[in-house]
View 1 (cartoon, helix red, strand yellow):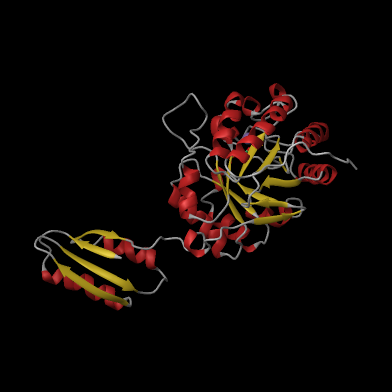
View 2: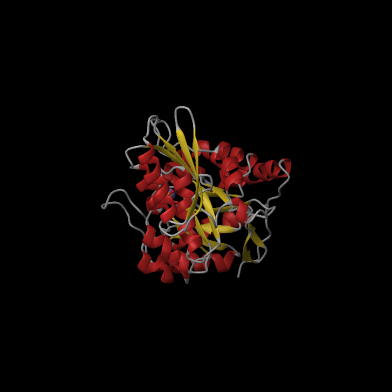
Length: 350
Ligand code: PEP
Ligand code: MN
């Protein structure tokens, strides 16, 4: 790191900072300029480093502390230049050459609703079924999800139509339970910084999709992923689902620039959620295409047989025919960017 001292900092202040750095095991190299002195510091112990840097910043004569290395390690591109490929079994890989599609209702409402959707999205080429059994709701009076019966329906639908299952876990006490039914655990935007939950899913071996906090910076998001990786679970994918801005015409502002940017910073696969990202079903197709074009490894799309009657997020849920029309278009875009995508599967329903 480089510690920049304020103009006119006295030699005693420079010495005090140098001594503190030495005490913490750094090698110290001050450079005395005409106006300012900077202190180069290398080495030092990792333990408590972040807190120590904050402490240094609070010294009266310190202007700034500039870090040379990134604050996250396991998820940094440098730690795995070959990139993470998550193998879900049955030929479903996330982060490889295939662009994967996760599709299904925002929330599981009934057996009929889920089975109809699952069959349709599977036939159209989706390989992963989405659906919430535990719903994070801004209002305590909104629908909170079916719970275990919803998880059971997801698992049944997955088995029946050859789909893997992704569903949200909100409570660290339910990680083990949800993991019995899901192939991927979803951590929602509201929980991106729920560090106890992140530590808990870090202990499990099951793949995790970490959604971007609605006001999270890229670095905060990667540090949240680092919590999971530091716990021992390296099966992590990130999901851009839009951030809050001044704009109210869309539900969120989908930050597609995050995709190519993240590719330079991390080896983790990146999924895009254009449904929460826009809040409008007419925008989901165009944003899905743009996401694939700029390098997304997968999409998670809300689809409902009767969006106008959906308990949650009907306005952003695609109809089945619209989803069926979109998939071949996405496939063409995948090919144009050197990827591939499964579409139109023959299903043998059991
Ligand atoms: C969802 O996927 O339905 C959802 C609630 O997502 P988010 O956490 O991104 O709002
Ligand atoms: Mn939703």
